Image (cartoon, rainbow, N blue to C red; front, side, top):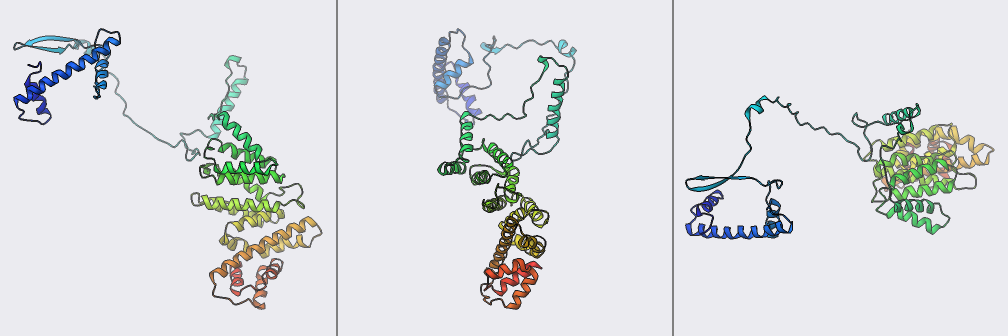
Length: 445
């Protein structure tokens, strides 16, 4: 006969939804339960003995359950063993856990505890895509500077050496030794005279997926090199290639650093002088590369940042239309706007070609300065290319119209565009279609 009565088994079965359990089945289950409990206690006793203890704990039982691949007990503490008391009810022995006696007078005489506050949560953006938003919860750059200034002031006003506090940056960015070595090797390689070494460096920047931590350092390096070497054409060209590689690395998230990259690229595009000898060094090609890179950034991120291209376009248009700017800057503005698309050139450049030719190109082309004449010819060539781009776009849209422009059409065209750029355009495109000239004149109006 089992120590577990069959009534206990039936009660457990009813709690699980099993009713009308037969006595024979209940007796057999009681015997099996007794066997399993004895087996579990034996295993738990082994854990107790190996632990050099003489008291069985809940941890021992849980260890035995895990050994049997059974889920352990939850909700039982294993600090102190519970104390049981024995009582007899209807000749049956009953064991129960002894509770501590509580004095109501002592409890009632104690002051009431404070009312707990309601649980409340607030959330704010610490940073969005790497940019800290200007909200009251986040410290502003001015607060950080004021904090540093106050610490330095307190440090300088007679404090002892032990009272001095070292001011540390708000964010500590630690680079591994391997990343530091990689950064040094890459920055040296991109300026190396070895073409193969430079190509490998740019290829690594374009393909390597593990450059996330180094990205802000590379961007800062590009900005620093361009600002300190704005007349060294080789360094500027290398930095443009470096920026191009980083922007084309599909594993990098470059968007938070565009506001640092774009001014550096614009410096290469519209800078007054970006080389030591403008007459012998080909700085025009570097400006065209910078224009292509700016157009690539606008095409890639213009949809996500709606003000990006308008702001760049406004900057370039201002440089193009300002007669006080040098011709090198105006050339960079022209090729920059041209790379942004036909619609930009149609709206912003074509209507202003005649005014620009009369104000800027005429004096440069007719002057005695060889360098200034060369710069004027480059601007003239860039404007002719703009007109050819607009004309080709019109020809593509009207492929069926093959009528060649007449002399009257060309005279009207010259009256709208001006002779300085118009004559050069017609010389290069003698068989221009009438629809193409009309499209340019429509844009000019």
